[in-house]
Image (cartoon, rainbow, N blue to C red; front, side, top):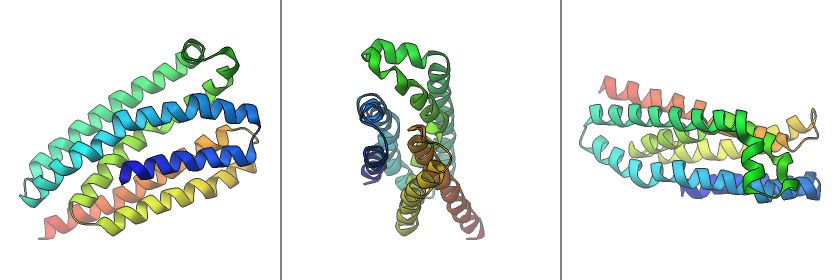
Length: 199
């Protein structure tokens, strides 16, 4: 369900692009940006829900909290490594990568990918956070965090549109949505940890 919600957020960005930007910008987004976001989500975010969530849930049920912390530390390291490599690649080679993978007319999508790389770490970390929250049985909070992220995505898009006509506004809105979800999940995660200490 969580992976499906991530895909939903991507398709909301597609709908916003269709509604507010030119055919060329939509083409850049559909051909280059959306597939890249989808592939990275399936490669690095979906496995967290598929494999880490069940493991964390078992550890929580059996009160093996040290192992939960070890899983978290490992995922933070992986997230930092993957997102840093992605950002460096986009910073220095986004034009080359797009030119190599796609026809020349899609080169204008390179700056959009660069902006996406800036917040990809929040997508990965949020994957763990929601897995942790759900493992403790806080399904409603997890759903509210996801719905808030979607609302922030749509709301901030219209705010960014007041300042720029560039399609980058869509990606910035998506990034802001994930940043807000990360911060909300961090608060819930700390409350869970405090409640465990008090028990």
